[in-house]
Length: 84
Image (cartoon, rainbow, N blue to C red; front, top):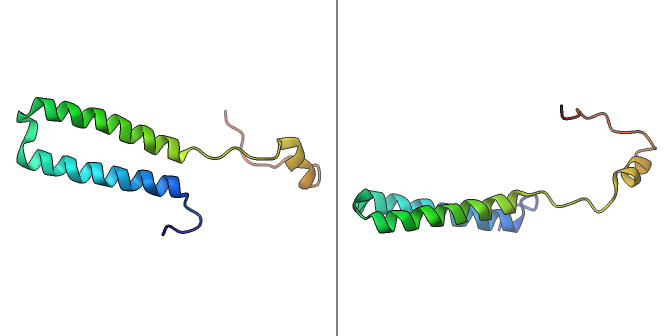
């Protein structure tokens, strides 16, 4: 069970990534690039795995608006650095 601060979807995506890498390493050690069709399948699977990992890393949207959060901070704007 992952720690409470780590989303289950992220852990599932990381497990999927680990499984993919393990399978890819085994393939490269045994067949290598001599099996072009299987290699192409791995590349497609890699893209899908990375997409799943990317989706799992997106932060959930806040349930409060910035103005509502600002009011809960006493009406002041937080002083974090702004993107340039």
